[in-house]
Length: 387
Image (cartoon, rainbow, N blue to C red; front, side):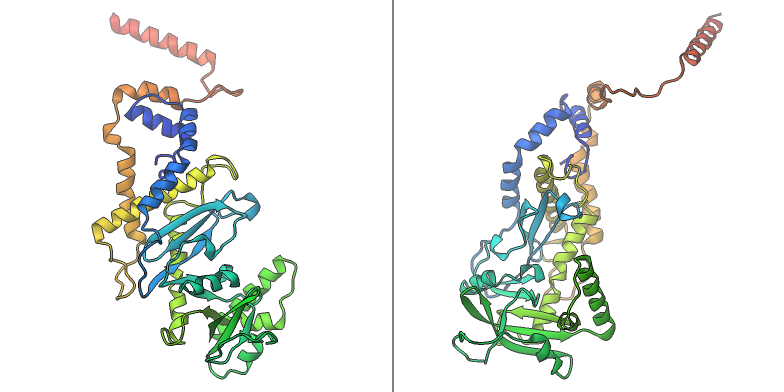
């Protein structure tokens, strides 16, 4: 926890341990860290609620992932995949080449999963629907092959043309539209619903500007339909209108912002995006697992003080976690440091661990002539005092 929670360097962690227990080198600390990866994963599974639970009528879960150091994918060693509900439920640390996927998590019947456009994988969504797991996902029109469906239609016709979503919305009066669709993935198809909410003019223009900028970075030019759809919030869901009305689906999707805020807290308060390891180095995954363990300990301590339901979203909210997490972090950090238990007699051992290694350029010292003068004056002063 010194290394991951407090972001101490290996040598600093070894020095702290030498003050508390016995002398240990930074090399020995590194070997122990690399050896405890499986133990960390097991401990995280035990401390998080997990997703395997008895089926309930309606359990909300948000899914998201982030690269821990916030740099370009070719410099990232690992990606963190989280499933937060009202708290952290499950976490996976995987290679950056492992993309976002709903198949990664063991959801159970009755779950309603909120996901961003990176999770537009029709086969995964249809597979979850077969298991009575509903999805609310922001649409990426390119990745979601949608077909118009008549309400009550029992089967997907083989010659059905794709839905022209932009053309349909151009004919909509007002700021909202809903329609029944078929979602197709490979040879399979299943029913769903699209709910569209028109953005205000300023927000729509800002969204189209971001769309152009993203396309330019990839050397492309966005089409007219793409720019038009950027002015809408488009949400696909397998939750039927009988359970959640058209107005409720976009509002429910907005709750996914809590997952974004959780990542923001992990990055800004707990420094998740500033790892102490080099990209693709062996301790990288262990560092991320340990940082997540540190975050779970803080969350659990916060729940101990304020109760498990203090930030539930099914009632009026009175506070956000930011300031409370900072306060509790200080308490947890004090546990880790245990400064009151440091042994004064161990300082020489700690100095021997933390001191600089032999190097070509030595640490700066005073010139030899100045040292001789200082010694002479000290000797003269001692003689005067004796007299």
